[in-house]
Length: 513
Image (cartoon, rainbow, N blue to C red; front, side):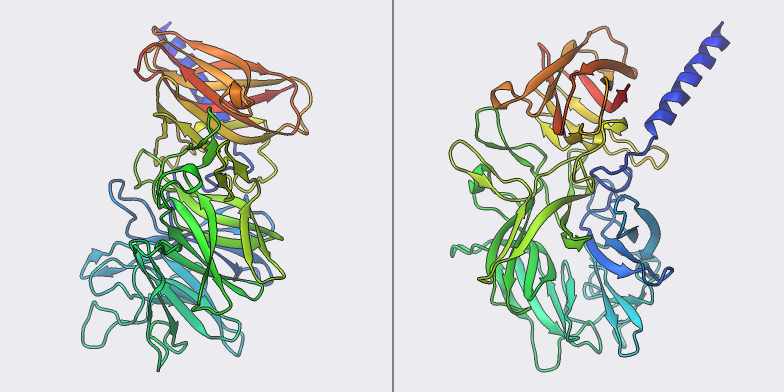
C-alpha cells in the first residue's frame, strides 16, 4: 500500500514538474528566472557565425554572491533580432584573476570598432572593482569573447592604465571618434584615443560634472547618480543614466530606481534634461486615486535599443527583498525627435492621478517582449509578477533545473499582479488555476481584473478560501473566468484576520476549452 502511495505521489510530482516547465513565449524577466543579470547593456551586433544576421547581445554584471552586489564574471546572453523571445546563453565572456584571486566586476559595457578593412574588434569595459584595475579594458574578435586585457601598466603588474572609472560606458560615432562616460554621484566624460580605446585623446582631458551631481544643492535638474549609457537617435546624442528623483516627483518619494535621459547636439554636451524613461518602482494609480509605487525600490541600470522598428528600455528589478538578486527587464517605449530638435521618450501609457501627478515613463509589466500581451494559455511562474503591494516579494531560487520563482511573505491586504494577458484570440471557456502553498493561516484569495481595487475599475471574478488547517504543500485552486476580450491585467488580493503569512504563490495556469 505504501509503495502504491509513493508511486502515485511521484507520478503526480513528475506530471506537475513537466507541466510547470512549459516555456512561455515571452515574459518579464526575459531571461530564465534562475539567472540574475543586472546592469544590462543591450548591443546590436552581427552574428559572427551567421554573417548578415544580427543578434541583440546583453552585457551585464552577475549577481552570484547572493549577499553582495555582482560577481566574478561577465556572462553574455543573446537573441536573434527577428525573435527577441529566443534568448541564448553564450557563455562567460570575461573574468579577471590576478595572483590567483578573482576580481569583482560591476556594470560593464561593450562596443564594436570596424577598421578600414572591415575587421570588427570588440572592446569590453568590465568595471573592475579591484584597486589599480578600475580602468581595465579588454578586447576580442567576437562579441561573445573571450576578451583579453589590453591595458596592463608597464612595470606595475596587476595595474591597468586609462581614464575610465566607475560604471564605464563607451560610444563610437560614425566618424570614428570615441567617447567615454563614467561616474558615481558625479558624472564624467572624455573623448578617448581610438588608438588605445582607454586613454584620453591627446590634447583633451576629462570633463568633470558632465551632468552635475545628484548631491548638488543648486537646483540641478539632472540629479545624476550612476549608470551612464550613450546612444544616438537620428542626429541627437542621448545619455541614459540612473537619476535620483526629486521628493514628490510624480507623487512618489526620491529614489534611484529610475533611468532618465538627457540629450545634446554633441557627444560631450551641453545637455538638455529629457525626463524619466522608466521607474522600476512601477508607479500606478492607487486605491484612493493618488500615485503609488507597486514594486520594490532599489537601483536600476540599462539603456535603450531599437529593434525591428520598436524602441525598448532595458533595465533591472530587485528580488529576494534586497538588491543582490536582480533580474533583467524590458519595456517598449516611444522615441521621437521633434522638428524643433527635442528628444521625447515616453512609455506607451501615460497616467495622471487625481491630484495632477503625471508619470510618463515606461509601464512596468510582466510582458517582456510580448508587447501586445501574454497568451492566456499554459503555465506561468508566479515570479513574473509586476505588482507587489504590501509585504510580498519574489524569492530567488537560483535553480537552473527549474525556471521558477515563487512569491512569498503574502499577508493580509497583500496584492500580487500581472500585466497583461491578451484574450483577443481566446475562444471558449477559460479556467484559471492558481498554484499555491498554504502557510497555516486562514485567508482568502480574491481574483480581480484590470485593477486590484473596485474603486479604480477592478472587477472581481472569483475567490479561493485557504483554511488554517490546509497542509503546507502544493495546492491547485480553480477559478472560472468570464468571457474576455483584449488585454487585461490580473490581480490577486489576499485577505485574512491576522498578520501571519497566508500562503506562497507558486504559479498560474490557464486552461482553455
